Image (cartoon, rainbow over all chains, first blue to last red; front, side, top):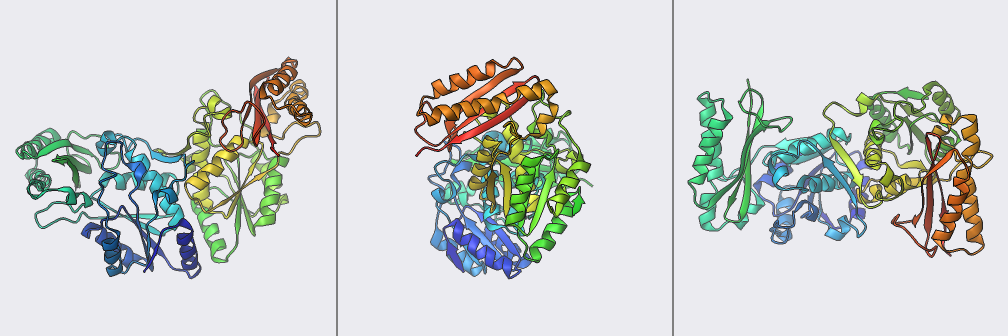
Length: 282
Length: 282
């Protein structure tokens, strides 16, 4: 496994792989890798002859009051995880390698970023789209892998790739969960023992919604209210949002009569966690 | 020479060329080709084994009151011009091939687009950067050729390519002029005979500025005033702007003490023409 920090080093390796006719899979991450990332690496490994993992805590996707400085980092542990998964190349640049002093170009997707996290984190998806565009252009992969846990991000990236004609297949991979249902996330490391117990309320709300849907409930108001009540019972939890949106357009839905995404964001203490599930209409 | 209208057809051809190891040069145009475009094609032909010309009047770079509907088009004549220059592939898509109904992704460069034409044509460079990103991703060239006549566009594209890590060399080609000095432009076709005579005032203003600079004049105010006086003497002309800016940042300069761009935009009747020259500081 090769670990490089400069764009030039990646280009050199990719060029050699391209000339040898190898297919390339990209797993873009912010590091502090967990089983969710590992499932992306495994999918990339299965589909491609070479796998690149990028590890970069992208400053421009964090708001001024967000957790850029405290975001967890452990490159040595990440290297071991990548090595175990058979990754071929890690690209872990510095911020100045990615953004020079005169940097001033941005990629943005309108519409899809108006709801959910986009509404609460202005500029977040612009930062994501910009860094993903850069990583696509640097690594020139055949396929790129993103977690369904970040459902809005996945939808936005797919739209961007289609709109801007990137010749890259975007593959979404299922949410990986802890034994009690908590979605794997690097930010789970922020949680105290008490908060960790409380954090299961996101998954419980999802389970509750799924049970109601199975029983035939179609009203988003009724389902959301039940999810809301379940979470507010947990004193350490504070709801940021619980929303049902159309799976394609991410615009609000009132009744479950089309393929929909139910997404929620909840603060557990100071830690903002997200989770979601997809409702498939039959 | 192959003439295609769909993205899929371009990808197929580019893939075959890539597999054969050919280098590819791209000349993006809005058609109605003139000697300026031909000089770009000649440069592309010299540097690359295959040359793609795109012909697309990009709707999203026109403002609501601009000349999208009347922009001159003559695909049959353009094909002959490309054939003569040894072009290998023309890509001339429809607007709906380039922008589907849900299209919502944009690329923008801040800062460089605040001055000159960017200031007068809000959204113009966002439209340019977006379509150029799409054309880059569709044609995947080694090199792309742009005219120095659109000096701000060239600076913006270079910045975008550097910021977003496109693996493409951007080559600017000198302004091609008519015998009397008027810069070649598809929009010159709008000019009546009377207006065509008047249009030489842009070049006369540039010649006047260059003569003053040769005589040692450093004051932008003094030079701009002389250019202004020369153009206002022409009754068919109405100045949009005459500006001197730093060649790299495109921010205003007061004195010629650094590499600078002098750019001007002048209405001749209803037709907006642009021209420019570069001052190299020694």
